[in-house]
Length: 421
Image (cartoon, rainbow, N blue to C red; front, side):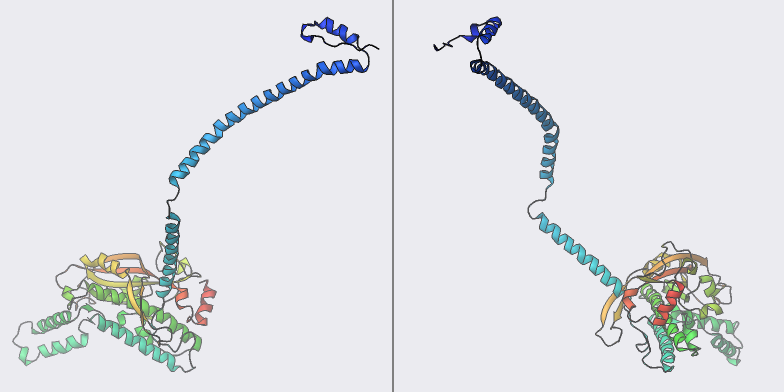
């Protein structure tokens, strides 16, 4: 069979001519001719599809990049501008370490406020023996400590009735018979001399607890331990008030020149219960004991802090009635709430003395009354030319439980649990 010649210019053929050509081929030769014409077209169409999809995808990515990459780029630029400088990380680390040290120091100082000297190192947290003399000695030390506070602030009371009576009798004797008003002049001179010799008027009964321990009678071991504990914290409070008076009156050796003229009474009931009328000490106030405030109804006044005893602190309310120069009202209260120093020799009393600071008082209520010098309770006091007023305050005192928890008696802890403190 002769070999066929396929040198045909396909581009010049028309569609009808192509069909005639295809009809002229049979079998394998037809398939070969068809593949020569079809596959290039298929490949061309596939390439067109791929290029179209690539163009569409590229356009979509471009739009997404415009939306997302530009803001992200701006964010990165902003972060670069605000990123820490070289060494800033180390500075921040030192700051955080210093901050933690401050926190630890504050906790330590808070504990130290309640690490205080004891009147007796033989009773807390439990007595070293069962002798009732332990409590009698505590009472004696309490009274001695109050006497020491009076001496520290150069406090004396006005002349007693016995002193004035003896002076009047002397004035009525033959030597004064021709002196007009001799008895009253002598009384006035005695009152003036007393005011000049003291920096502030006060007597032992001005401090609550003095009468209690002078008349102390043993009842039971548990009651006596609790009495000693509460009067120990009561003494710390009273000591702070006397320290305040001493600081305000520093440099004055006369009532006439002292800003604080008289300590009427310091105690653990309301001011109205402390005094009857203006300046008269009440019987109820003299026997009131310190106690923890465990719920709002036990407060001496409405508390703007809202604090009561909890797992971290013990709260005690106290009151004080003072006669001060009208110019000293605010300075006195400011000094009362200021930081004070105390020594601590451990709860054995045998360790080297350390000097700590405490600041535990908040004034909750204050009232100012005029002083009526016509009252019997006021007639023998001399305050000088200053305008004076009677200041009555109710205060909150905070104790840190971790500060004295190691020596708090079990009897006190049990009582606190029963009352919700």
